[in-house]
Length: 173
Image (cartoon, rainbow, N blue to C red; front, side, top):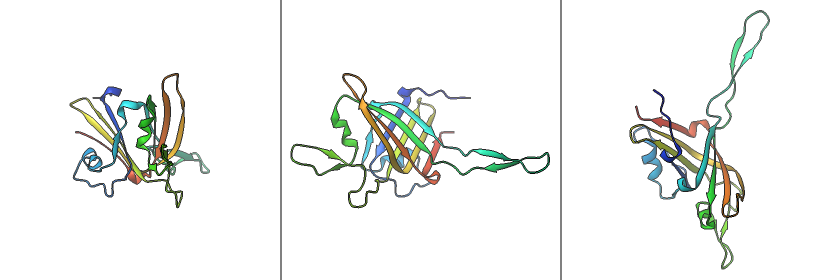
């Protein structure tokens, strides 16, 4: 039977830290919430889209009437979501850095190396009986697009990517 999920059944978190080791004994939510830096962005989230989760295939046409199937290299799994804010304090989910007195400043990576900080993104869907969990560990924010969405709110669209080995999906059975 197919489960239909609705936005009000979802929870979206971003963590400033990746999970050091994802084990096979605890569920993904327990492991994610064990960290100290997760931020619940569910109240701001308007759109969540996962892509590049599977690998494509193509046909190889050798001489003769037959075809061979070729597994393509996978693209990196990614999640893109849009957050809507009415208060700029919500930017606190980004990494804060030292700023002049009276100002706040955020930075997308480490100052010394320009490397982006590795983090984790977690999504849970639950209707009280069924649940599904997605964890992108060691994820990197690869795109931040922002602008005024209207007169009284501000939009930020974030894209995170991770390696296939750091993408986890689970559901209750």
